[in-house]
Each structure stands twice: as structure tokens, then as C-alpha cells.
Length: 299
Ligand code: GLU
Image (cartoon, helix red, strand yellow):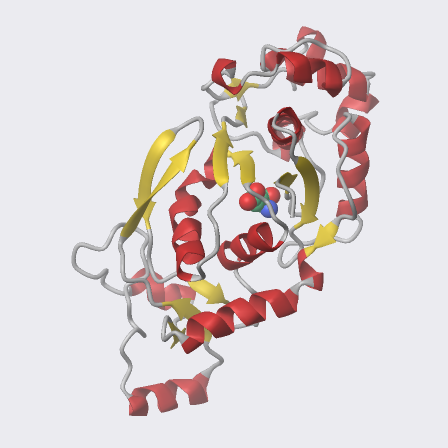
């Protein structure tokens, strides 16, 4: 299988300019290294009717093209189930019955990092297990035997972050993002993952899961986000931040693309032109504060 990069949006709504900028970067990273570029719709959770079609149309409008068919996670449940079975058979999982509230209220385990699962259900005895099973369906958690893991990122260097007994399958049967992403990237031959740096803290968990499944770890590049004037990650409430909003104000998709390229120090025009000048080492390492093209900032 030839190597590939990817963009993997969650179809929870329209893409905003921050998502589009990340997509452009993922495309440039892949194309500049001779990789294929794949599009995967992460619709296991948070999918909104109609959102996928709008996202694909907006990506195409700014020139982000992809190879082959779009892949949807909801079509790939058997792959995730197989991976969970492998981990179960290796004794690397356990059933967890905790509600979110119970987890919040549980005293955290000694030395456990903030936010890590406190391990309540890790060692239930058979009687407790039977009782809890009678109360509610179980989630499946990973039995992690490390508390942190170090990953390498092309832009950020070595990054060490928390690994806990993460959920692999929720108790409503939905497969967790951290498992699905690892299985998909490996199965699709994706060996380069370019995504927003808000996902860097999840990466040690994902690389650890990959190591347990004996699957290769991709190269990572976590790229700076687009933020609003308060420094917070851009969101729909920040005004005209989608192609549709911007079009309503008279800004074309080409102008948005050029503005995003400009923010990356790249020349305007088709992405193919920017490709010739793309050099990851010259990319800005700081978040970019959004203001709409033409100097009019979002209301
Ligand atoms: N689906 C995730 C998101 O839209 C991205 C996952 C990834 O790139 O690994 O935030």
C-alpha cells in the first residue's frame, strides 16, 4: 500500500476557517511528500444530517482534493470490533460501569494525573462484576500499564502525555475516537497525520494503543490552530467563519483560500502553486488570530 496523509473531519456542522486551514496544511504535507491524500468522515458520534455534503463541497471549493472514495467510520464497525477483540483476548481490557458523574466524584488514584480514570472498575471481583452487570451495560476500557507515553511530532518535537485506562467502546456501543482513529489510520495505510494541535494531548494514548495492536505509528504534525481575538479556539459563534458566512459577505472561496495561504506565508492561487514553496520548517509555530479577508474582522 502506498503511503498517505489524510483529513478526517467530524460531520458535526460546517467547517470553519480553522478546519479549512488545517485541511490545506494536511494536503500540502501529503502532496509535498508524494503521498496520497485521503478523506475520512468521522461520523461515529456527533454526526449531523447534511453536514458531510457541505464539508466535502467546501473542501473542494478551496482546492483540497482527495484520492479515492471518501471513507466513513460508520461503515467500518467490524474493523473496530476486531481490534477490541484482539485487546480483549490479550487481557488488555476490562468492563467499566462508571457514570461520568461517578468518575468525577471518585477520589483520584494516588499519583494519577488530572483527568485520568481513577480505576474504579479495574479489579472488580466476580460478585461485584455480576452485580454491576445487572445494573447497566458496560463500557470497555483499556487496561493500560503505563501512565504516560512519549510521541514524536514533526513540528513539536518529543511530547510526553497522559495515558490512562481510556474507553475503547462506550456503554451505548459507540466505539471511541481514540481506538477508531488508530485502527483506521493503520488500515488505510496512512503514515502521516496532520491535524490541529488541540489533538496533541490525545496522541500519546493513540500511539500507546497502536503499540499494543502492533500497528505502525504514523508521522505526526500537529499544526497551530486558528484563534479568535481572545486567543480561544475559533468557533462558529466567532462570527463569519465558514465559507457560507463569508460568501454572504461577498468573500469568495478563492479569497478565503488565499487569505489562509497568506497566513501560512504561502503565495495566493491554486494550492498546487503553494506546493512549490511549501516548507514545514518555515511554518508559523504560533496560533493565528483570525480576521476576515479585506481587513474587516468578524463582528
Ligand atoms: N475528527 C477529528 C476532528 O474533527 C479529527 C481527528 C484526527 O484528525 O485525528 O476533530
